[in-house]
Length: 93
Image (cartoon, rainbow, N blue to C red; front, side, top):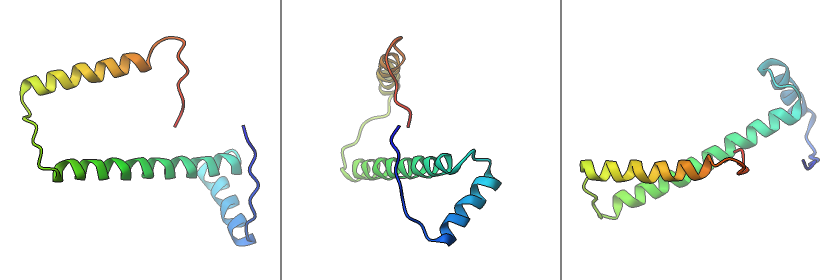
């Protein structure tokens, strides 16, 4: 794990210390990692929303037939199986 040093004004340091004490974090590092994970999730959600809106605006319609859902489930199962293979390292996000 890499160490990152940042400078903060006293008011922010005190705020972070209160958050650590009152929100159940073990230390400041856990708190900051949590904030960064939340930021990553928001960014990923924003990218997904942009892609979804772009897809909706494209005008290319896909019929949502029973065959569509069957194929979608089949493809999702393949992806899940690849990610759940024994011995494969999985990254945490």
